[in-house]
Image (cartoon, rainbow, N blue to C red; front, side, top):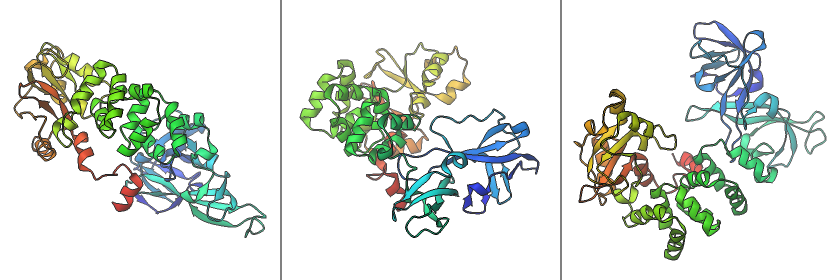
Length: 419
């Protein structure tokens, strides 16, 4: 993408938007962003473009190939003509951020936002990095009309989603549409009191998803802040392997108390996973991959992998076994990858298309061996079987990455600085 570097959004208002052929599509009227719970610069999601008859549409920033002082050029002339409607938690930069009153943290000066500058980060996303602000007349060191100067986004108070300016209900609404990993990052910057208040306002499934994205120390602290019955419910909602890892960081007494409060059928696979050593296939695997019996059809298998709650790695293949279907299963017959499923008739049986030529992993297979296995066969997940050829679970590439990455990798600020 060709740009002029740092761009002030107020100067974009009203400039023309062109397709690659030079035909005018409309004019920029605003930019859409979403404030982040931490102090990181908010990403620009897209532009509001006014086309014919004052009709306003949304153009994602990924469609923008060039921004110049007098024009914005898109990747193609095909745009979604649906009328722009702001979603919950989105903000219009020009309409809602400019003229807002902020406090410059270093000096304590009260100022108004005059403009917002956007730049591309290393991920090629556009973000608001700096603000042009004017101090209020009469303020310390201010001129008659107020002093105009630039500050970093993180150097002002009054725009971020801080707990001092926001009640728990409003904060929960703000966090509702964020990915679990982003919410986990936000929780890390909150006080323990506020973190507990936010956790109390979430349902078990949402909190379980977020816990799985947190550092182990923060996981334990948050789980300890919950009543035992609630903690057990959240553990039940977590993936078995993540619940086992979390319990493994707690004392034996805490482990047993919480396992006893869990439903027996939920606690059993977690107990089994806790018997395997860390950094082995058994210690990393999930005991709940997509498992099908031999008489299941391709249509039934595809219906299972469409479940939006499955991770992409888990949904990439189904494992075919003899009864019983729950792990540890009957004899493992093979794996049917989703690409193969898509090429077969819906009425075909999965047992007729499953493969076993790449072999399997044992529960004691080391991390290095698991990594080489996945790389050798270009797989995103692999079956784990015992000495009786019963399927115990599956280890996926995201589980492997969690164990290969350095400690503290979820701390994005530190990772970006050191990266």
